[in-house]
Length: 205
Ligand code: Z5A
Image 1 (cartoon, protein in one colour):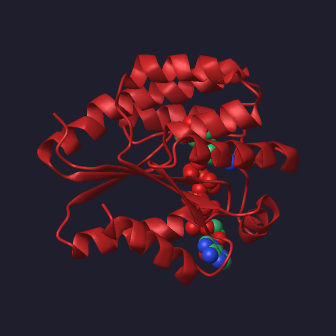
Image 2 (cartoon, protein in one colour):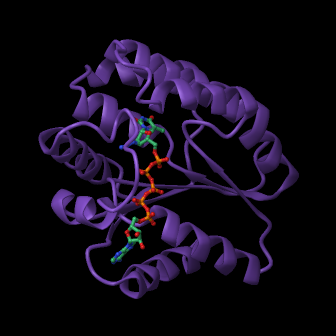
């Protein structure tokens, strides 16, 4: 039986997830909440191996269905071996990306049938969903300009602007579909501005 809260954070490239994650962990700890940080794809030993397969530019070609199935295989391990046991102890979990990313990247970006993603979600997650999702939103060009000084791109980052615009559109449409859970946060201004919006949401939990 889940006792802790499960929070996820998502968004397009350069939206500032990593920047805000540090703030969120500190803010929750100051409130006396034990929060474990994890990420997708990954989060477990096996999941991190799957992450390497998924993101390495050395993995030259991969069928889009294979990509989707690997995301869900890593997620299944993540939920059972890590997330659930932490929540059952009463601690909170903050995951850097979760299932919404599969709808955005594999559904929106790759154009996979959303109904097939929903079937996998039902199979793997059953009725397990985040208590709250923080969706950091930024126009794709602005996000890209923030990350352009980074080194080598991963396999998915090598996609073009149209791909990332479809990803962003899919995220926004999910936030409209699930307005109670997915909180759309404007991350196009300063780090402080994004932080203030996140604080208000966390205080409401
Ligand atoms: N993926 C998928 O396809 N399907 C799935 O189901 C899942 C994932 C779960 C790995 O993600 C990839 O997996 C990802 C989606 C796919 N692929 N892509 N592309 P990741 O989360 O590990 O990788 P990432 O998207 O590159 O994450 P990131 O580095 O944590 O995100 P970020 O939003 O770019 O964070 P940042 O480092 O905090 O910010 C980037 C820069 O912007 C940095 O220099 C900051 O100082 C700056 N920044 C941040 N906020 C601001 C503001 N407000 N103003 C100005 N500058 C800012």
